[in-house]
Every structure is written in structure tokens, then in C-alpha cells.
Length: 218
Image (tube, rainbow, N blue to C red; front, side):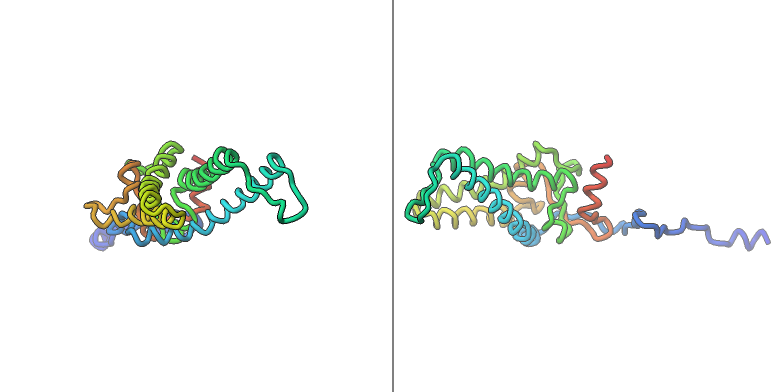
């Protein structure tokens, strides 16, 4: 009888099926540096939401600016443009703050925006932790560097608004084309901000809402 017991295989802990229980992860699977195409697609997803937010902010500020700085008429011929100082000192900073708040809130809470969650992407610093507000702002500035540089070059060459915007868009694409030539596959903003965007395996992927809740508890 003692022999039969000795041959009995050791018991393993049963897998928990309770909601919220940790999922067993395959040791062969691990987060990897996100591919440039996947990152661009995630940006396009987020871009639609960002444009909607900027449109809302712009509409509110336009109404406020019209009421505070201009006399309103009753005919279309009486329409005026907002003062340049209002556009440069109020509207432009508001757009920048909207962009910073959008990415900062998501990166601080769960490391993912809505578009990044769709493709299981997560942005963390080089230590593997969620970004601070300072790191988020630094990463956004780093991501804007090449579009700004390309836009300035385009305006100097062509001078038109269309050429400037096209050049700025090419600068944005350059950020991710750079991944193809970097040995680790890092984008420009990854290197300049000491952060990285990872492709998470399915078993380690944490939903956006759960990430917000867990971050709040901690």
C-alpha cells in the first residue's frame, strides 16, 4: 500500500475559475516591442476621438471668444474672425492641454488609450512602470518634435498651409518608420522620452476599465 501511494503523482493546485482570478500565463509568451504598423493603426483609432474632443473644445472657445471679444451682428456680412491674440494665447494652448490630458490620463491610469487597448498595446517607462505626468508630457513633446520640424521645413519650401500640414504628417510617419532602422525597434519618441510601447500577450492583457480600477485601488 505504501508503494502505491509513493507512485501517486503529486497534487497540483486547482485552477481558479472565479471572476477576477489571475490567469495562468504561458511562460513562452512575453510582452514584445510593438510593431510600427500596429502603433499607427492604434493612433488612427484614437485620432477620431481626439478630433471630436478638439472640435468640442474649439466650438466652446469660439462661442466664448465671440461673446467676449466681438460685436455680434444679425447678417452673414457682419461675421468677423476671432482676434489673433485669442487664437494664439487661448485656443492653441487649450488644444495642446486637451491632447496632453487625453494621453496623460489614459497612460497614467492603465498605460492604454482606447485605440491601444483594441490592439493590446501598453506604454510604460523603461522600468516597466506606468508613466508619470512628467513622463507623459515628455513623451508627447518627443512625438511632436519630428512633425514640427518637418512642418517648418515644408513651410519654408512651399509656403502654403497644405504643404506645411502634409510635411507635418510625414514627420509623424517618420517617427514610426524609424522603428524599422532601430536595432530594438524603438520609435523616435521612445528613445527621447525613455519609454516604450509594448504588445501585450492575450493572457497578460488587462482591460481598460479594470486597469482604471486597479490603478485607483493602488
